[in-house]
Image 1 (cartoon, rainbow, N blue to C red):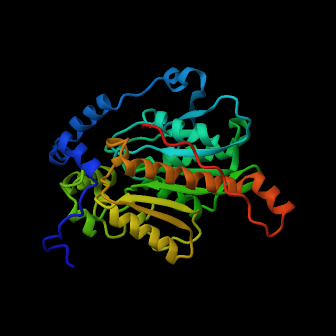
Image 2 (tube, helix red, strand yellow; image 1 turned 60 degrees about the vertical axis):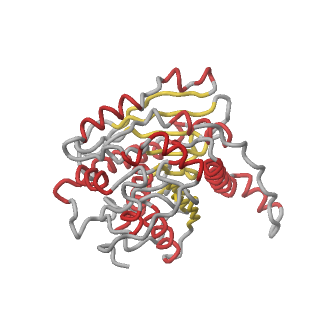
Image 3 (spheres, rainbow, N blue to C red; image 1 turned 120 degrees about the horizontal axis):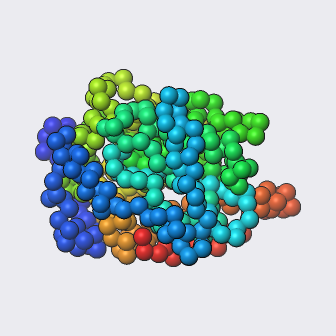
Length: 366
């Protein structure tokens, strides 16, 4: 079907999500334009305050510190917010996390309470959250190069940070998911990251409603624009802020918009999830499919009736609880299969199937 024609009716929202959207009136909100972008950034900073390091320590449950590391060539230092459960022996697997906010908003601190509660504590993970520079103050490739520089530092100083360089999962939501996908491509094409005498690559990539495609040509982008919480006007505005003069360029590199990649071979296993009622649905599904077609591993979930950012908008909805549990199970399975206990089981019982890992605790309100 040509997208120049009227798009088909949108799929319905999940009833619990519909109630939240109706109450908030988000779909009718003001779109982001070049003229209103700064006002949106100011409102976002007010509405998404940064918890302090002491608040993130949660009464002594977590070790938290802010770490400044060398940035990309010619760029400033990159700030990483480092956190880990107290009393868990290392070296720990690492979740290297990039926040959402369309690459023009958000911060490394505000995402951490949920990340620490849902993943770091039950799975024994260390977390590094990246404070990458935002557009339009900088353009591509600066935000991605900030994320790469932080990962280089993390892997190159794994012993100092108390992390296992072979068990690093990169991930993020929305723009953060797009940056995680781009980072996986960049690490692959640069031949890995030197750490402890050999080249290392991420163990997996956790891509939640990832922002992958600048071209705004998918059916879901048109079908859900102005119905989902995001719209095509805002989408074009933020991509133009990120890309500058390269906006709508036919030869944009895949590190700028991973949906443009023509070779998705050799990537770490991916977890991709989207909502059936969000603009990013089709680009997420297509990305997982392209990984399969390249012979790679991807686990894809399309959450019925879910809009973009549904888990933050409706944290107690049944579909949110299901999505959070599925993400946690994927992370748990990936870590168990890569850990020393897996090697021990394999050596002691050749050919035997290992016992399934215990179910994680029910996700808490985010």
